Image 1: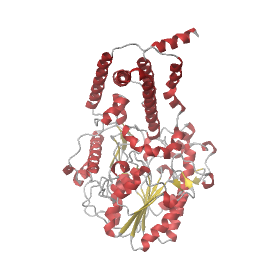
Image 2 (image 1 turned 60 degrees about the vertical axis):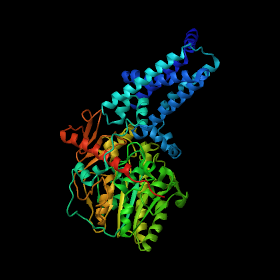
Image 3 (image 1 turned 45 degrees about the horizontal axis):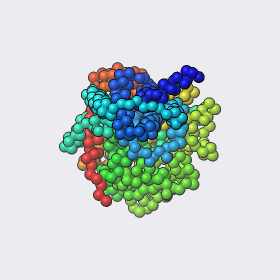
Length: 616
């Protein structure tokens, strides 16, 4: 008792600036262990501490006798910020930045997913709030320090922050995680706000040419492209499957196929088993954006929220002169991820959302895939009957995280050990999604919309992160894959293209979502001579380089041989082979592709920012 009185008495006699500085520093130490896996004493003392002291000195300077509520408010705000960044990192493997506040409207829709991954250890960020009770009981004595001294120290702290930001910027670190770790999380957010950590000098518009893009990708124009116009004047239906990963294709559990309908479709389709996601912060909406534009997502904003007000060259606009009518179908509200603006920017003539599909049978954000397909096909038939060709995007959402399929819709029996786990729920959800793919095919056939349709199915993004599985789930996944589940496996999503007049074929070509548009327009016999695009036709080019900048740090890329992830620079990065997923030796060829991948992103960012604002 005597010892506890001594401790509390000592604490209370301290100036609040000392106590709250110690508490906030303890939170930062905890945060660094959660997110970066270690603590760097130099970063803590020379980069994090000056920022914290500056905040507290400003409170002393400006708040006067009412300083205590401001200390608690500051502590609460920064606790919430650190918690949010930690949760975001667990969910996406990337850092939450101040720009993501534009996505705050999406939180309500993601509540169930956030609860699913919430770690009870996160509550330690708020343990200091018990001090509020202590302060109400005792009257702490503030040390009397002249305000002039606070002003001097504040200036010193501000200078230390600027110097630390400048020092890290000089290292030219591309990897956002490493930059934040080196700079300190608070300083990193400050650097982002003033623009130092986000954008280098934008390229001149005259430098953004298709010839330059092809040079960076290592491709040359093909005089007579293979399969050009093979699907000329055919209808185009593209189905984007939520969180659908490629390992599901052909997977059997206890002798039963998880995806029998997609497996059946393989027998009359082009199948690309080495196809990878390239989404940014917008995830599903970014996949839609890439499909329709062949432009890379930015690293700091969802494309639908940042560029929904622009006039964007797109697949819908390309096809309109060829007598196509475009429509997009999404069972959630159009305002989610600003799709109401994005679809206008992309030139879609018809849009259907939650108000059309209703809530008769709801899974996750909206109507089930069964409802999606049953209400969509009659609308497609109307377009066909009007004398127009169809270009339609269908966004299937029934396999959205947290993978909780209503029991009455379950079509697959999972092993007992997986029941109640995220992996088990994922298998059940994707098996249901596949059952409805079969339903869609039957509906298209029954309405005369199947035979002459270029039908495309692809996955939008990772469902289960490489570090998201418990020991039991990881063991099952390793057994199914024949190897450990990794970032490379999680990025691998399926691409199937049922092309009228073309036999089924498995194509090992490495590709990404950026390549969908040029591949589709080649099959349709449409040229893009006057349009900038960053992908390549997967039927005419065998080599590829795919920049990544979300879920993996900027500077990561996939090519025909490896997945590369940078460290502080290229030279301390890591690479694994696509064939074996074993560590690969970095050779000069890969260093050159690292530079070219970054240049492609830079050109794409400059191009999309140059697009004109859409006139009302």
